[in-house]
Length: 127
Image 1 (cartoon, helix red, strand yellow):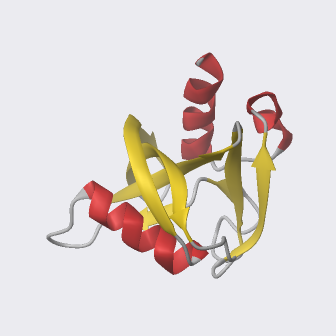
Image 2: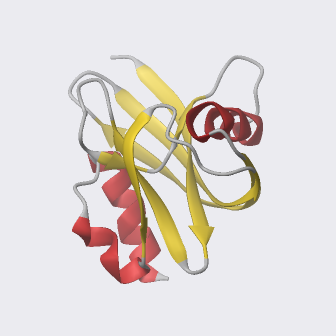
């Protein structure tokens, strides 16, 4: 079984957390923290900055790592490195996602998360 290694941004602003809704693929319509695959010779942080620029058209500052999630999907194994981030430049644009919402920490259960992202939600709710 193949393994996919990705990074994800938990983007925070004024106490709220950004959730994005997938607009394509097997998981279309489910919610996730934005991010994507790490390319060859790229650090986790470099990949995350690049992915957010590609997906949301803005630049982020990475504050700190939250966790690494290991999740088994039927087609692949996922390793997801998650970081707290803030938008440092530009305005959010939905370049790949169907929708986005800013959620209060107590509203995180209001959307239907991808299974791996749900593991991150559980960690965020413990803070």
